[in-house]
Picture 1 (cartoon, chains in turn yellow, green):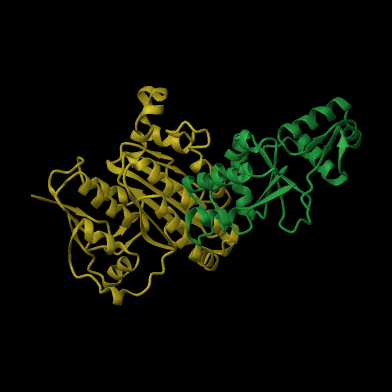
Picture 2 (spheres, chains in turn purple, blue):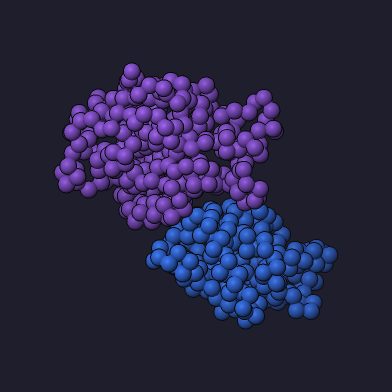
Amino acid sequence: MTRVIEVPPHLDDRSFEQFAAGFGAWPPEEKLLLDARSAQWASPYGLIGMLTAGQALAEARCERPLLAVPTSPEVKSYWARIGFFRYAVDLFELHGKLPKASASGPSDALLDITPVRAMEDVHEAVNRISESAARILRAELGLERTATGRFSMALSEVCQNIVEHAGTSGWVAAQTYTFRRRLGRRVAVIAVSDAGIGFRRSLESTHAKRFGERWGDGAALEAALVQNVSRFRDPGRGQGFRQIKPFLDKWEGKISIRSGTARLAIVPVWDEDVPLSEHLPFFPGAQVQITIPAPEADAR
Amino acid sequence: MIETIRIGTLLRETLATPYRNLVTRPTGAAVRDRIEAALAESDCLTALLDFSDVELLDFSCADEVVAKLLLARASLTGRIVVLQGLREDQHEAIEQVLTYHGLTVVAVSGGGDCLPQLIGWVTPDVRLAFGCLCERGALDAAGLAFALGWPESKGREIMQALLERRLVRQEGEIYCPLTIA
């Protein structure tokens, strides 16, 4: 029997919960079909979330899932340009016609989907984004040079978390787009996702006791993002998220981290998100999104 | 004597690539090892770490390269560490990391035309005393106290704080600001 999981037409960090709920108990026992035929748009968070699902299913030795590709030529073309199908082909049995590589054209992404398996990949991602970030962020968001440097620094820190904590590989992508519904401004978004052990298991041996019965996915996220703890004894560790916060404060940015069944966010005034969501549908690993909006005066 | 260490050169030698981005903890730790090796072979009194050909410095490397170098007092053996050629975002990354650790370091601009600055955890009195020494030159504790309108005991106390943080050099009763020109 095959379980069909509808990929929401607009797949982003919000509708991701609907996507995650489709998997049911983890790991799913049935063969899965991810049906993306109706997809109209997907954020980097959504795209690498789908890859993470495929990776987690492979690592759980589940039957290779099917993925019905979008019917919209424009959507398919964008997914191809940003590199989604390059990696999806190894994780899913793809159904539907894919655009030819030569027909999809060059990507306009800040950072195409990039696997993060080792520290060398973090270097590669930072080097690639550094080339384009200053130009694109300045032209599209009106961010000054110091802000583009900090954007790359934030990317480096969240990617290192995968290598150091996940116990497996992950993905990163970055893009600029107009955030119509919530903000009405251009935003730059970094999305990072892995299929690893998640924050709760990463921090459990060193921090669970202190939280007692409260310990869970939500408490683990709170420990990492708010209390800046790390599983490493080195006093300089666990500061990555803490160091990103002043940058987010200055630029009215948002960070949200989802792990297991919880999601914690530092919510700027322009957003209506809740700081902590618990009892969400389980999804493997950890998913991070950093959103930096264009300054209000430069909204376009 | 001043030992100038070009961090960008060490980075490229460490990674064996032309990259100018100093990112990830293992890379930062490897660069710090090379700094310590260079200092072990030098009899310099001041180690001038030049960041001018580094593009990006992330928080992990600010911690591994600068904070841990300052924390490893043994390898410095009384030397003063000075940073040069920092861009604004690099300055801020180091500032955040050093403040977290309660550390302080001296930074100078690449051209050497500005007075040295303190980066990291600094009390207002220490900052004032450091600025006074940079402007007026070497002073003893009484001279500092007189210049700032403090009691002499406070002058001694703040000079000792500067010395413990290796922000000035002591020659007998005199405390000398950095001279890197």
